[in-house]
View 1: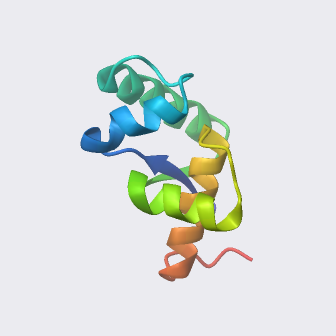
View 2: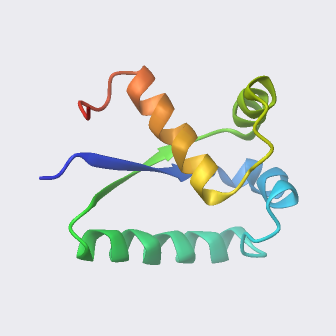
Length: 94
């Protein structure tokens, strides 16, 4: 099995805050869940191993602020999910 590709899982309680910072997100949490499920299916078809990793808005926003990262987009959220997984030793990717 290929190494995991961590993707951000947004908790429903934090979704309004994420959406305020990234208006490209679907209007509803249910819409986001459907879009994410489709994204996972596409990644699996390409041979990737997507693993959802929950991120919380406050911690993500604090990290972005400290690093001077203005973006709250999907790629930045996924980067954060990947960083968190590596920090906890969940991946052996080099």
